Amino acid sequence: MKQLTKYKIIFFGLLFLPMFNYAQETNPSINNEGCFSNVFFNTLLVLIIALLIVIYALGQTLKNIADSDYLINKSIESDGKNKSNDIIKKTSVLLILLSGFQLKAQTTHHTVNSWLIGGLDMLTFFSMIAVILVEGIIIVVLYRMIMGFIKPITQMRVQKPKTKTILEKINASIDIDKEQDIILDHDYDGIKELDNDLPPWWKYGFYLSIVVAFIYMINYHVLGTGDLQIVEYNKALAQGKLEVEEYMKTAANNVDETNVKQLEGADIETGKQLFIANCSACHGKLGQGTVGPNLTDVYWLHGGALADIFKTIKYGWVDKGMKSWKEDLSPVQIAQLASFIKTLSGTNPPEAKSPQGDLFKEEKSNTRDSITVVEDTLMIKKDTIQ
Image 1 (spheres, helix red, strand yellow):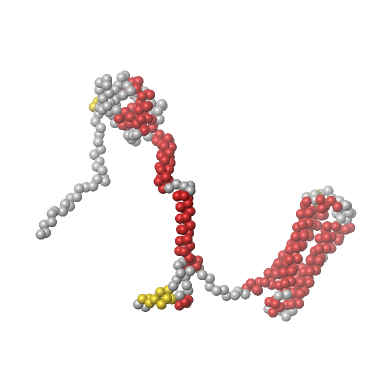
Image 2 (cartoon, rainbow, N blue to C red):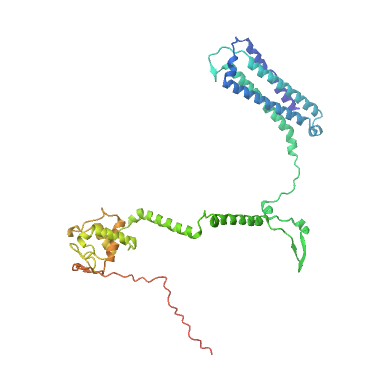
């Protein structure tokens, strides 16, 4: 009963809305034939018409719900059916009133006003906005009425059969109460066998492996668009070598006399070229010595270890005519040059200069290889058992 009173109040409230529209006719009018050429006006007009269509659809839905057997049989109040018909009648009257309101808003003459909103005078603009608001209110009311009718229906829940979990579906497991349908005649000491199918995940995985194998064969062995393992390995090695070289261009420059290591291979050849270009003038192309000392014997003025040679090249000995090369050569180049000089020891080139400095002996590390296998001390004697 309270809902019916609320609907009556809304109905009569909306009934008096068009009176504001009729009051506009007393204002001085101007020619408004150019409204339909205004894009903003046409947009609002299309919105009004669209809302009318929504109202009509909701009204028809409400009518169908009100005429359904469920509401007739399950009506709480004795006059439920009459109330539903009364609501439908009121909704129809509202639609008629709204249509008249819209048409009246379109034909109303407007007061001359210098204020324009989107090319429309204020009276036209606010009139159309009022129509849209009224339509919105009606849509909300109709929607709430429909939801009020169907809410009891949605609350009636029909008991659904138990749905299987994802694990049960992918295993296609049979319920325990249905295992009698798939039991076999095999009986092994009281243990019986069930005729279960293969799980779907196993079958589809097997089918997928066949498809993948076919694609693999076409890609790698027929078309040759993919690289086989040995080709991928060689490419990875080449890429790794490039990355190492790129790294050495920057990180290798951190080398100094405290961590320099003996280089080999291409680095020795590079060191040889550096020696010929920068050191041969004082030490000879073969390291036999000219102005500078002989680099092929075992006598050294400032130490013959790799770190000592690196330090001598880097900082020089200005008082003895040896310049510092750290501004001319990078740390990597100095390491290459020092490694090449170490290879000159014992080459005995012709016309070598007499030894200078102190005898140098290379210190050998006394640290034994930790991976060396210790001889077996648990020697098993010959079998004395006769």
